[in-house]
Structures are given as structure tokens and as C-alpha cells.
Image (cartoon, rainbow, N blue to C red; front, top):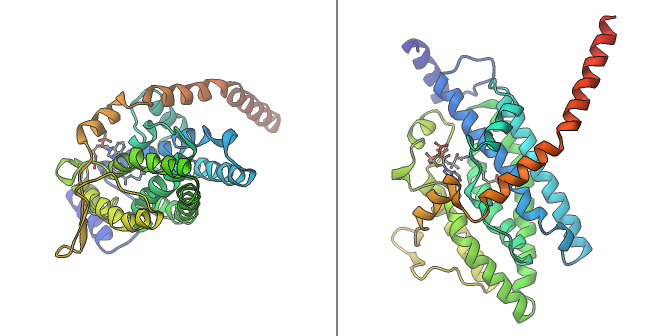
Length: 311
Ligand code: ACO
């Protein structure tokens, strides 16, 4: 690529300008954005599966209405993100096919099962909490359509986080059995939530270039630390114990010291070997196949309309 064009592009990024779809951009910038935004969109869509699992079994009508609305919001986030990725010249169908045949990833967290009602609280509190921690800085990302999608998504996501905290608080303040359920949910979701931020900085292949292009604003470890610092006092308020014996406030650093998740488990999960990878992809493949008649019907209708216009 032309070094002058590359330098001018970097100067725009450094000056804090937004890059828009029709602007010149390096191939790598386009490719990284398609990967990251596409992966993010897939995560929103696949993320509806563990929560959808509890819609019919929510303990009250109110909780059910809230959960339904939240799942619907997540599907909407997926759609804004697919639209943002489409501005880079990839179609939603292509991205979907790449998800379905395993060429594209989605967040590791959604390969863990939601086993009890308190998991729904933990997902809102921890998973959406981790998602916002990563998404708030992405509102300042250099690609205009991604940045604008993030602004709306973050508003909704912060409501999701609060509803999750409220749901797990109700369990934590409930009967001994309910409190036990809340603790069990925290035990199982803590480390997978820490993994959401990606591998340690030393193993993060994309961070350096993505940060230079302001596709990413923070490193994986920075955001993970921020998440731990924010979440530990919330767990204390609930009377729940974070499952980490090494968790300790470090006065000197002004941060909590904490144990790293099992990174071999993380790499295994993103290779397709997590507890629910096979089920998640089977569900998405089934949804795609079941929807074929709708897509065919819409296309046939569009063709008929177009032909009528010509005639
Ligand atoms: N789950 C699955 N794969 C992951 C995860 C994760 N939690 N974290 C990192 N990876 C993958 C990367 O995609 C990359 O693999 P690839 O080259 O095959 O794509 C590899 O691990 C190395 O990681 P990094 O170099 O650190 O990757 P990257 O710079 O993309 O950072 C991050 C990962 C932080 C997740 C980034 O992509 C990002 O900020 N994405 C946008 C946010 C997002 O996707 N959130 C979705 C989850 S939350 C929700 O939607 C409800």
C-alpha cells in the first residue's frame, strides 16, 4: 500500500478524526474491523441463547417481561453491528455463513451453560458488566459507524447490567437455598467473565496494531483489572464470595491483585471445545435453515415487485 496514503491515514487517526465508510483505509484496518465487529455481532446473537433458555422459566411475570425485553435488545445490538460491518463491504449473509461454519468466532463466554435462575442474574451482572467495560471505550473507536452503534448499545447494556445485579441481589438476599444458588452462579461465571477481555496482553496478537488504529482503546489486561476493581465491592455488597483465594486489595498499586483464569481452558473454548460450543452452533444452524423459506419468500416478492416496476 502507498506509504504516503498510510501516513495520511494514520495522521487522521492520531488527530482523532472518525473514518467513514467511503474514506480510503488500509486493507488491514478494514479486515480487522470486519473481524472484530462481525465477531461482536455474532456474540450478541449467540448470547441470546443462554438467556433465552430461561424465558419460559423466569420466576415471576415481571422477571420474564424484563428478560424478554433484554434478549430482544441483544438481538437488536447484533443487527446494528451487522449493519456497521456491512459498511465495510461484507454482507450479513457472508458473515453468518462464516459463523455457521466456524470461520468466525463469537465470545467465549457464551459457550458456558446457564444452569439455574441465578445464572441469569450473574450473566447480567458479570457478563454484561464485562461487556460494558469493553464497550464504553469503544464509543471512541476510530471507525464512525462502529462508534455510533456503540453509543446506543452502551445505553441499553447498562440497563442490562443493573437488571442482572437486581436479579442476583434478590437471590442473594433470599432463602439459604437461593443464596446458595447465587454463590454457585458467581463461582461458575467469575473466571469465564475474566476471559471475555481476551488473552493476557503478551498473547494478544491484535492489540498493538488495533490500538495504533484506535480500533481498540485499551489493552485486554487494563480492562480486566478495571472490571475486577469495579466488581469485587459489588460482590461484597451482596454478601457473596469471589472464588479467588488470592484476591486482595493492593494499596501500592491501587488495584486488586487477583488470580488469572485458566488460559488453556480459554484457548480450548475458542477452538470449539467448550461445554456448549456444539449446541450453540447447532442452534444457530437450525435457526438459519428454518428461516430459509422466509428469505426465499422475501426475495421472490422483491423480484416480483422489481419486475412489475420495469413492466
Ligand atoms: N472470545 C472469543 N475469542 C476471543 C476472545 C473471547 N473472549 N478474546 C480474544 N479472542 C480471540 C481473538 O478474536 C483472536 O482470535 P482471531 O485472530 O482468530 O480473531 C485471539 O483470541 C487473540 O486475541 P486478541 O489479539 O486480544 O484479539 P482482539 O484484539 O480482537 O481482542 C476483544 C479481543 C477484546 C474481545 C476485542 O475483539 C473486542 O474488543 N471486541 C469487541 C467487543 C466484543 O466482541 N464483545 C463481545 C462480547 S460481549 C457481548 O456482546 C454481550
